[in-house]
Image 1 (tube, rainbow, N blue to C red):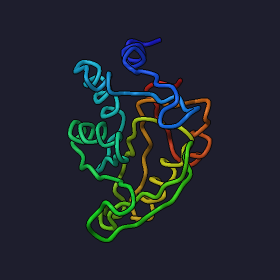
Image 2: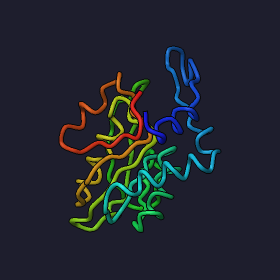
Image 3: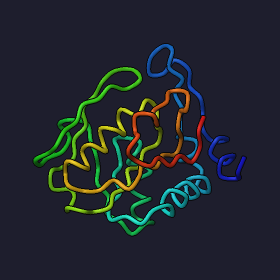
Image 4: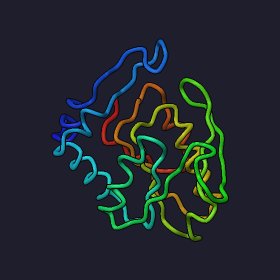
Length: 172
């Protein structure tokens, strides 16, 4: 186990039966509250790829993606839940481990050919990440990779992302 892996895993709290019975929620707030751990995660995600834009997926993905974009010298683009963006949008619907949802991005968020890294906190079933990839591509940009703090390997979300590189700092 690497030092970064230990740093991350020691600061993620398991919360059983949240947000509904049978779900084991991985709470990253203790990691975010630790400035050393938070900086290490941002550095690890930012140093991986050269890109023009970093996409952050609502809501916890914003917490990681914005400082990653700053550190990488890239722009930040929010992918939000349906109805939260003020201008013309593209949308994609998907299933997740305990329901379904629709996300949106501004139609003009990317220029053709821009290199984009999608950042999120957790890769679970892969539905959210797959929808974000679809949105970025429909907007005319190229998805370089998806980078996540933590991958829930037992849910096999990576299997849904066959045409994009996935980089996980830890897999549980």
